[in-house]
Figure 1 (cartoon, helix red, strand yellow):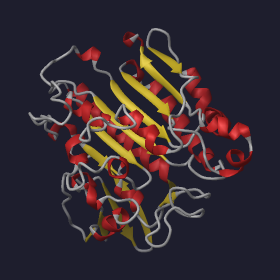
Figure 2 (cartoon, rainbow, N blue to C red):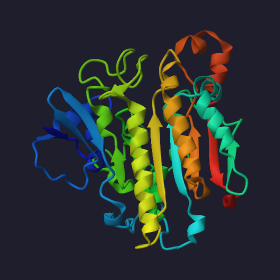
Figure 3 (cartoon, helix red, strand yellow):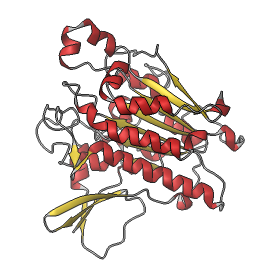
Length: 354
């Protein structure tokens, strides 16, 4: 038996409300099938059942070779972005943005020591340069205002139909992908009024990997999905089919990078730069301990992308939207409130960008 998870990228925003129906729609639109079967090109994940065992199987589909080059509408909502220019390829780096929700700089250093050590070591003069923004600070209490500043450039958008930054990248010829480990659609939650009946993901993304994180294994089907013991804000480790939630996200990122690299070195067509953003929720819980579970996977990823040489043409950003606003440290100590205002932000950029 195989459960074919739906392609959420094409859904209108009205079907992607984290508070009422997103996870239920994923469950209800999952197709149960038997072997032999042929998967649609848009399928990113399936759950395979064999006796009493089940596991998640993921892929990046369609392949880059089959993915058509996106042409934005002429009357584009992004102020008629010009997509006709063709800058030199060395001026178009790949972009990877790992967003660590509710992680301050001190929280990062305390709970992710292996990752911090690797990050500081991957600075390679002549190839890539590491920059940490010590004065980077939040502009609001919670995710909404801070991520609006990140993704729209404005807390109060002057254009109600402005698209998130990944839409801008796609309009400029980038292959775009987004992973959200909290069963969430950012536009639906924070910028949906002008797009309620449309699919912003279909307009702005080539790939969306969210459906697995809406499964009951990590996102409660009933009751409060944001409790202390299950869901994206839980005090305990978040897992799907025997692996941490973040491990599935890193696996998808690995497959995505591999697919893009294979396409680039095949020589059959012009190189296509990519932009992928991933949201991790492990920092968003009251104990401040769950973030520890990410350290091994993040450190491994940082070392791997350094050893592969990808940082020579890739901008890597690891940053939070704000520090932790839950738990005893924030509630009772000035230190906690200071940390809340100072999220972590560091990036590696190719030397030729400076």
